Length: 388
Image 1: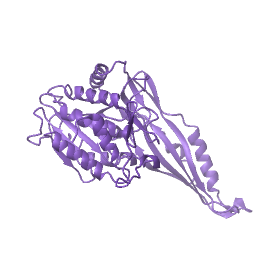
Image 2 (image 1 turned 120 degrees about the horizontal axis):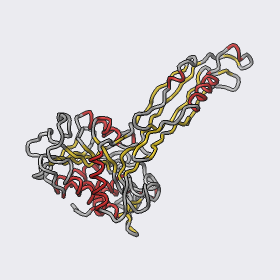
Image 3 (image 1 turned 30 degrees about the horizontal axis):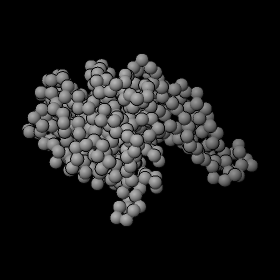
Image 4 (image 1 turned 90 degrees about the vertical axis):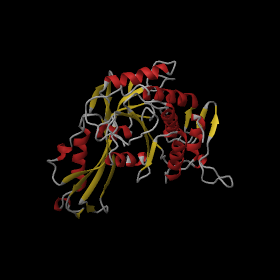
């Protein structure tokens, strides 16, 4: 096993994990067992979790000490053909290349590079007296946070977490910023019901498309939700994205449905009750990825101070437009921040890559925060549901 962040990133990126995360999880688990004395576990869905105290291991298995978690995910979206090897004996592996100070390959930016940086930081850091350091790499982030939700249901709710999703080049080029809030995503299907009739006698029926059109007009008239965070407005959005209705050119339709993509902000949602007086219209929430907001100024300040110590630029507290697993953790009660190497425009692309120097920057920032937070002794709130 290797201790280099770059080499560990290359190893993880080479392992296919868009359909089955098992092999990538095996590599992470094995490395943690060989490189640390932490208590390492693998749960029923494949999440890899590790926990240690100031002595380097979780000797008594207690979960009532204040904790900081370094969090990532090792699943990825499907690769492009150009990102998969076809040479004999290595068919199916992801192609990994290093050039111009960057590592290229599916998952390099989103987010195996950050996972590697967190693993090395977890190994090297000594948490404050009376506090625990936790590592978690989840499965299923790209399909709605499957792993994070399972872990939370099983009791994984650390006091604090740094989620290693992208925060580089947000405020300005060349810096890795600290994200204190991000948007969520709610997907909703609205269905209008009517009464079918022959199109030559439209008044004999009730046109479901017309009812759906009335509902769409109501949705379009809604104001986008917004909140003020870190001196800027974090604004959501609402868009009708799909529509389906009708069975034939000569039939008044009895059903029409459309989907609404809503980018949510902390504490705000659009109110579908504006549709309640349109006859025979109903709506169902299909996906609801929660937003995240950190209201702990001390935690954000400590993270920002560490970020500034680990780079020559001037990072800032910023917001992020995309949902992450920090939303699920925040909803469960964990105080979260996002800090990671990925840059806008890198994730999910055919030439996805990550900067090696920024990986090292993140590793050192994670280590510094892990050695100074939580403050020794923590606060007085119950620890019964903290990270296992």
